[in-house]
Structures are given as structure tokens and as C-alpha cells.
Image (tube, rainbow, N blue to C red; front, side):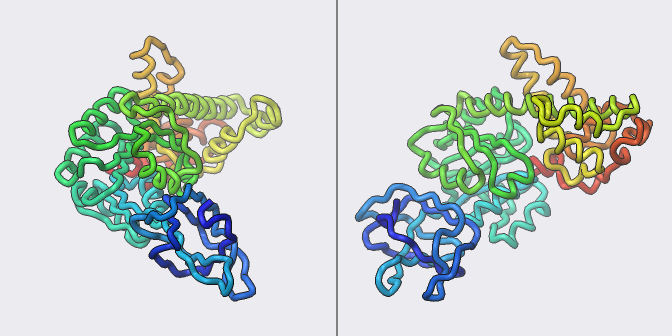
Length: 407
């Protein structure tokens, strides 16, 4: 561990940089302030989770960042030393539900963040978190070490990257986190090759809440030689990274994401249909929950999505109906291209599209529940009084393809 195993003291609220007695680390990350007071009036112990990387004696880091703290050694007289970390310049293209949360966490980890969104008003609030909001994709990627894309789909991502092209530097790492189809990933990787970019296929698992908490699961595939650069980005936005291979163009991470999303979409559709049937048959949903409680059919996801429907809490969305419809179509296409018929995914895609057509596109994907009813019948209210009204305020929701994709 960096610092030769010495106990570190921390004084909140300051940052230093400079040589550190001939020892440097490629990454040390500090979370929110915490710890207890020392006899010297300082705070000691780690601030949040620390992830020290191997040290190299006699080396120096590019730039030093210690967020919210100055670190001093447990040496006589509490002599101050510096912890050296690599600060990156990260461009975030697309600041919807996911992109905005990722940009905030990157800035909070001490990185310089430059963000762009098609609708600038959705990116402007990030300025309060220290994020520089750019007017164009090219302005956002200028001087970036890492470009992170979190847009609606593959074609939208390619369009934005082409706009950014004049300012892209050869050798820049591109973390492509948009959920795109397998074919689209190949096209994006081809663009990366043309521009000399290191391409990382890196979709994430998680919705609004884990994104805001920096607890996403990052699925990643890309060259080993650039991982030291992208790992601090993954650490800032996620709780764990699962590497699926070294060739981002093979879309190994996207393949895993589509498999995971197929389960999520099936579970969401099943939840909505179960509640709709319960209402139609006059069954209290709590009777169903009690019947499966503690058994293999019981699961937290069922209760979470059911609560959104039953308590009329579909806005703001954690993951919007319109975006779920897009992902369901990508799953069906992947199955067709590989000789697999996915009837549940196809039916789910139709349900999401129908719910969106009824005005629920900006609401949480659980609102596909309303697809069980003919438009204008009152939805939940007309099916035994389960859930809320048909219109749960979707017009005011900050989700859907525009928000989630950065459009």
C-alpha cells in the first residue's frame, strides 16, 4: 500500500500537491469526508473507501489531487506528506439521468470534467458541481484524456462523436457507455480506429439511484494498455467493474448488458401484468406478496417496481419507458441475428411502445403496467383501484430518451 503501510492522518478541507518523498501512486481515491478527531485537532483514518494502487519509488505523478483533504503521515510532529494521484480531464457527452450523475461523481473524485448535452439547459445545473459545460461536442472533448459517451443509442453516439471529431486527439481513451446494439458497437469501434482512439465498450448496469451514488456496475471490454487511464473513471462512477475482454469492437460488454437487460425487462413486464390481473380479478396485491414471501418467487425488484405503481411514484423515472422500449428492441434484434426467438422481449417491446403512446414515455419503465388497459379506460383506476391515475405527471419528468440520452 502506498505510504509504506503508515497510518495516515487527514485534515479536511484542503488539498496539496508536490513531491512525496520519492514515492508516487497511480491512484488513491477518497470518498466523502469522515473519520474521527485526533489529539492534534486533525481528523485521522481514511475518508471513505480508499483504493491505493501499487507505488513506484523515484517516480512522480502527472498531477496531484486530494479531494476534500490534506493527508499527513503518522510521523513525528505529524510531518505533512503528499498523496499523489492522477487527475484526468474527462469529457462527458450526454447528461441525462445517467450522464449527469456520472459527471458529478467524476468531478467529486477530483477530475476535471467537461460536459455537453444536446439540450444545454439539462447540462447547466452541473456547473454548480464544478463541471465545465461546453457549447459543442468539440468544445467538450478538447484536451480530454477520456471521452465518456452516455447517449440514446448507437446512431446518436456516432453522430455526436463525428461532431466532436475536429478536437479529438489520437490516443484518447473513449469509454462508450451508451446501450447500443451489437452492430452499432462495431461501427463505433470502426470510427475509433479511424481517429486513433482507444475504444472501450463499457455499458453500465443500474438506474438513477445507483448512478447518483456512484454504485453502478461497469461492464467493460477494451485494450489492456489503456486500462490505467480508464480505471479511475470506472472507480468514480461504479462500485465494481467486470472486464469481459480486450477487444471492445467484439462488443463483449454490450452482449452481457443485453442479456442482463432482457431479464430486467421480462421482470418489469411480469410485474405490471401481475398487478393488472390482480386488479381485474379483485385480488388485493398484498395477498399475492404474502403468498410468495420468503420463497424462491419473492424478490426485491418485484416489490420495488410494484411500489412505484401502487403508490403512483412513476416520476421522476429511474429508467424511462421510452428508453426501455429501445433496449427491448435491441434485445429482440440481437436474438434474431443469432437465431434465437425472444417472444417475451418482443411482447415487452410492444408493451413499452404502447405505454409510451398512451403518454407514459417519460415515466419509470414500471408504467408499462398501463399497457394492459385500453387507452382512455382509466388504467389502474378502472382495474380495481390499483395504483394511481393514468397520468402520473410524465410531462414534468426529467427522463425518457431526451434526458437519458443527452438529447
